[in-house]
Length: 315
Image (spheres, rainbow, N blue to C red):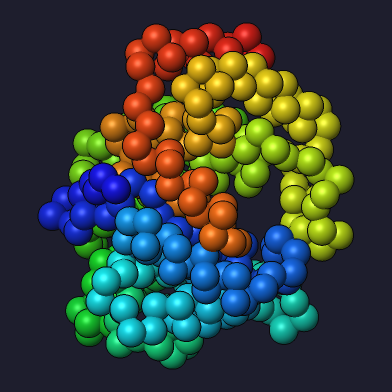
């Protein structure tokens, strides 16, 4: 699989990363029940098919995702670029809350290292901005963890340009993880240009908009506790608009003998600012389908057709 450099002087990671949100199992933002054996097999399949990095977070399943990832990479730790996140915790009653207090970041890092069964995390990221804590204090702790060797690179998720600038005054932000898909393109306006100008790597999440752009989405098949049942993208009129887009894209996908989901991921990867797209999977078959997107090249004519469709549907 092709690799791209993650930010200035950063490591080379594959164009697709394994997203471990869904394998976290039930929690406030879970995707329904999971089978840990299938999850481990999915991770192993991803590595066997060329994916060299995994993205997880302490909050996914309140630690469960990290434990499963730790089991899956046992014995092959050095072969995997491991990314995790901090700053979201269980408030004690099952609700995830943001907490970027420096001491909490340190505590979370120590706990993640134990769950992942590793001495270091390759990329450690602040999960969400915290209005209650000055970002400078949070970022200074991330720098400390890097200086101590507990993490190799430090990045952020869901930050705007102002927050990125404040962090960059202290220490380089190696990467940003924003949402980016055919249905969610607002990062194109300011965030992606800033990252390009400042050589900040961009690893995007939800390139298939949490399943909406797979071409197979059926809201009636979601588990009762699946977070998507309460997500704004999955309520009307957004749901119908998204499914209309899928049907408009289907002929393009069929002409290339690929799935709509692969088309959606390849579209994201066609943006030269994007380093990698994080694509989640809960079993090996999903992984085998996902990895195909890395090799798909969209022509300018195809990209123009997609732009026309987006304008037509007013997305």
